[in-house]
Amino acid sequence: MLARGYHPTMATGPLMAIGAVDMLIRLGADRAARKPFGYLDLQAPDRRDRSGLILSAAFVVYIVVRVKMNPSLAPAASFTEYRGWEKFRPLVQYVVPLVSIFVVVVASMSAGWATPTESAAIGALFTFLLAAAYRAITVDNLLRALRGTAAISGMILFIIVGAMTFSQILSFSGASNAMVEIIATLGLPPLALIAAMMLVLIFLGLFVEQVSMMMITLPIFMPLVQKIGVDPVWFGVMFLICMQWASCCRRMGSSS
Image (tube, rainbow, N blue to C red):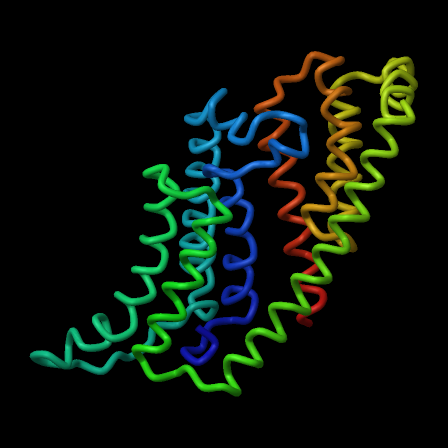
């Protein structure tokens, strides 16, 4: 998009913002909330999917309106006309293999053949086979990919271990229940408590990885939400949106 003259905010903004949608559709923080995996899906899958579709439609409408008001944000680009096989060669050569990875991963989960973690491994294997078919696998590329994966995975795992330890200490010591009781006795209206929780999520998201945020906050937030009588599905949608929004802000800040 940058190469075709799109404004940087129009090129990066929608890509960052759409991250809040992928977590709403068939994903969730159910384990950290001490619910069975897929709890929100089982309780109200249509409500979660509908929230994601509404956000997606809102993004599309916003982009169209902005571009209509200011065409320089996404100027018209010229395209090269191809005929015959050359017209379909880029689709077959580049698009179909990429989409096939997505199809394999999602199909294995949807059909119940594999768990999400196993589907990720299947996707990695399928990607490796495609790279081998394109003759893009070299010893140097493979070692560089493995080093990068080990560095990122190790960092995330250490963060998760620390967050889980903190969560377990709060639970076993009774501190989380005590905090819930103290907050509940303040007499604040439910909307004020929800707003405060969302602000905490946005602040943490500027510095902390998403899984750690869930491990730290949900042991306190979920009992409080149940105590004040807020719909857990509605809260889960708000939780995911704010968490992803803050993470997008952190990534944009680090990239700039």
